[in-house]
Structures are given as C-alpha cells and as structure tokens.
Length: 579
Image 1: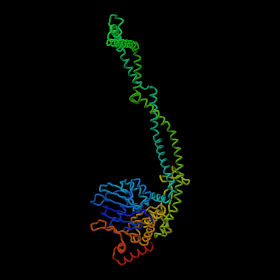
Image 2: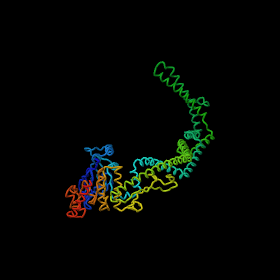
Image 3: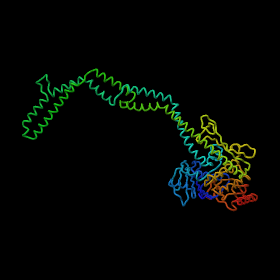
Image 4: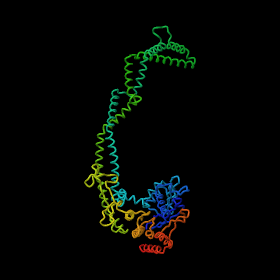
C-alpha cells in the first residue's frame, strides 16, 4: 500500500456544496448519491487543487468565494522537494494545498502555508493524482493522446530518442525559417545591396575627411571677407607700429616705449614705480608681437577668388552627401562604415544559404535516424501494451476483445526517411498512432472512436490505466463515471478491477453503480439538505446497515425493498470474498 495519498478535502461554497469534508480511504473509496447531489463536485474540487481552470460560475450563489483545501499524507520525494523549493512547509509530514476562487473570477493558491502560482499546482499534479472522467475518455479518442499514452508506457525507450528528436526538430525549424527568409526576400535584399553600392560609391568619389565640413566653412567665411580683414589688419598694424607713409603719426609702440624710458630713469627711487616700469616693458614686448603677427596675417591672407570658388564647390559636394546620408560628415562616414558591413553580409548570402542548406541536410539525416528509432521503440512497446490491455479487458467482462495499435506514416517527398520511405514528420516524430479494438472474434480491428460503445470505452480506459499503474504509477487515481454505459456482470468486473488497483494505489470513484460501490473499502454518501445544499452532515461514511440501504437504493431506487436489500448484501459478500 502506498502512503502518500490524499487524506481529505474540505469544500466550501462550491456549487451545491455549502461546507463539507470528504474523508478518503487509503484504498478504494466510492462516492455515491442521487443525481444532482453534488458527487461530481469532488472531481471539480480535486481539479482546482491540481491547478485546473478557475470558473467563477462554480462559486455558490451569495458567497464571496469558493475554497477547496486538501491534505496529502507523506508526499513523494519529487513533490516534497518541489514544494520546499517554493517555500512550502510540511504539516506533521503532510502537505496542505488550498485553492480559492472569488465570485469575480480571481484565483489564489497556497501550498504548505505559502502563496504560490497556480501553475505550480499543475506541475505537481502528474506526481499526485491521475484524474479520469467522461472528458478524459473523449480525449483518449484522439490519436495524439493515444500516441502520448503509448510513449508513456514505453518509458525511456521512447523518451530518450524523443528528447533528442525534439531538440533537432526545433533547430531544423529555425534553420528552415532562416532559409525561407533568405530566399523569399532575395529580391528585396538584392535591391538593398544595389542601393548600398550606389551610396558607398558616391561617398568614395567625394572622399570626405573627418571634420572637413567645419574646416571649409571657416575658410569660406575668411575668404568671403578677405578685403575687409586685410584692411582691418593694416590699420591695426599702423596704429601699433606706425605708418611709413606718415612719419609724424604717433603710434602705440612709440608712446609705450617713451613711457618706459621715463620710468626707467627713476625706478631706483621707488619699488612701486619699478614694478610699473616692468609692466610697461611687458606691454611694449606684447605690442611688438601683435604688430608682427598683424603684418604676417595681412601678407598671408589669400584673397584669390578662384580659391573661394573651389572651397564653395567642395562644400556643395559635401552637402550633397549630408543631405542623403547624415547630418554632417561624421554621420556620413558612420553610414558608410555600417553600409559596407551590411553589404558584406548581403553579398555573403549565397555562401550563407549554401552553409545553412548543408546544415539542414545534416539535421534531416539526424532526424531520420531519430524518427526511425522512435518508430522501432513504439512498435516494440505497442505489442506489449496491446497484450497487457487485452489481458485486462478479459478481467473486465470483455474476454474476446482484442486491442492493437496501428502505427503508420504518411509519404511526403519533402519529409524524413523512415523504413526506406520519405514520410511526413512533426514535433513528436513521423508516426501516426491509433488504438484499435476488435470487440469479438471475427470483428475487424477498428479505431476505438468507431469500434467501442460507451461502456466498452470506459473499460478500455480503465484497462489502460491499470496497465499504466504497473509501469508508471501515481499515488491516487480518481475516476468520474468511468462505469458509464456499463451494467450487470461488466459492472461487477469493473468493481473487482478497481479493488485490485487499490491494492497498490489510492482509488477514488464517483459512481452510480452498486456493483462498483460494493467493492470499495469506504463508501461516502453525498446528500442534499432540504434547501438544496450539501453541508458538513451531507457527506457521510456509510457502514453496516446504512451502506446496505444505500446500495439497495442504487439497485432499485427503494431503500427498504427486501429483494434489493438481499441483492445488496450479496454484492457486499461477493466483494468481501474477493478481497
């Protein structure tokens, strides 16, 4: 017997349930009650605890929120480790899970007293509980789910190559997308390359230098005012150094020199005057320097109109570049550098396409090998899985039924090679997996969606889960109406098989069949009160006479029918004998 089981759930303001506690057995617990009494709220509650979608319509009318709390005794190592990573704490060795759904649709989750994302509960679900109901039966009809079931049964034989296959498939998809972008946009990229070549050629023809635009602007300003500048320099020079054409004119250099001589004659008599004499000497030297530079400036000033025309022509060429490629010469040069790099990239497309194509071909070859490995592993596991499920069906009153798998591939000239053929492929390989059922000898195997009745589908699903329990067990299995469409001997066999499954796992079954409920270790009755709600007293553990009365009601709709009571007692006796 496993120990990490769901011990109890408390449900408040969910659907018809006002406030109820569901105490579960470590073995086989059957949940019964009249139609509409709220039995399926057990499944709904567990779904919320396992991170299911929060539907505000589930909140009881008039209540601000619905709350579901669950207690998992001694959770497995993987669950405990993940919970502790999230900051959760165990309560005397048990893990407490809580989910709240408000009437406005907000949802909160708590794990071990710690608020956690709802997604974390969904992560833990696979290691805690396997939930099966009518929706899951419909899911089993989908080939993708059937392939997933087969892969789960095969274990590492499929999981290892499938992991490698998915990684290679992802890389191939990325390569295909890149190649598609390169080839489909070839015209656009060619046009872009032509524009870049034209621009780079235009810039290369002008050959601008960094900072050249600022230098030419300054030179143009100087050349445009050359006469005024030369005249000003000449006048200033004459004022400082004298005018040779007017010997009697007084200039600044002569006046300062005279002042210096006057001070030098008496500087020895007063230190303050000596300091002024020194400063006057410095002024005389500075005036001489400025006068010399003014003379040189005037002599070196180029007033050639041809030079001005050449400068303006060069500036016009630079303006043509800045109008197209940047706000100044520095920006134009930056554009040219980036454009050259981009052109190199575009010109290398052919080489790049060739390299990517070779890489894609290598990946396709790798995928072919991995797809073949997946097909081989699935084919081998399919025979074992089908034999095991067929054996289980014999124990579920379908002794002549035979289950098999059809593993096929669809030819595709652009696909991967499997079995010497080119076939289509997807993220999970190249195999199309379909579960087939032959209900009796002579009947051709048909897809279970077409070849199984509702009752047969329920038993096939139960058989599949029983087979899984021996290879990939989970602590708790919850079945909602898995016995739908079944009755008589088949119902007894389902009850017997569920009881057998409960020897290695916790099994909770919501059922309307007394033949199934009789095999339970514990039977819970869900009853409404007069106001239509389920309260704490509305979920009771049935024992002794009370259990006989409920089974009688389920058999004949009459708790006090002697015939029904006798049949109920017989069912209980049969179940006890099997156990």
